Image (tube, rainbow, N blue to C red; front, side, top):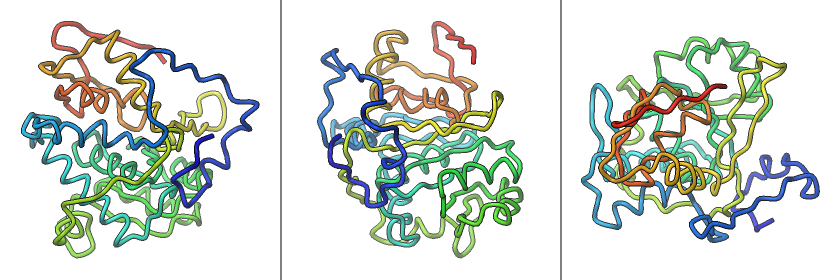
Length: 280
């Protein structure tokens, strides 16, 4: 394996032994990724570097964020995570919120800072939330204030959770207040390996206990450069909506669109000319 950029090696140490892992074949030229890779640089930062910073990136009912605006939000949250909350590369961060730009920005910020994002479904109750907290040994959570009740209850069941920071309320200590600090608009991406874990997505547990599926930085890009490029065939003029929640891996479709320079609504995913269905 490539030398990790993680200080906290929990995720990497809990991967299967190398001899039990499948063979990862990246034969297509577009899948030849460098060893040192932070996927957020490719998903977001490169568009501002290419002069496309004013293109729309995320569209919601309340706001539209350009690539530049989303990039600044991501940088500000990444600074909050590392400067104010003490997150180090490899730490897992629980995320709770409905599909909206802040949840997308929080996920990307965790990953850009070298952390491991663990998004959760909004409908989970305290007992269900406590399972991934304990399984992934999560000490920090970012949460929409409207979903705080069950998360607060989960602290009595999952002792690992030490700190919850809420967004959606403008008060001292809220995520928005911390983000406004001067000098937080810039952030250098963590020097991660392409096979460092950046996302743990827990299954629903319909066949037993939920399974924490671990995804590498290169995995997120491979979705864009493989499926989105050759099956969806997204282009810079496309806009996408759909129903998948970001807490499930197939909800990452909105992120994949940014690799193509297109815009996504963080609530729904549907192509402008055709609809793609899938079945779990």
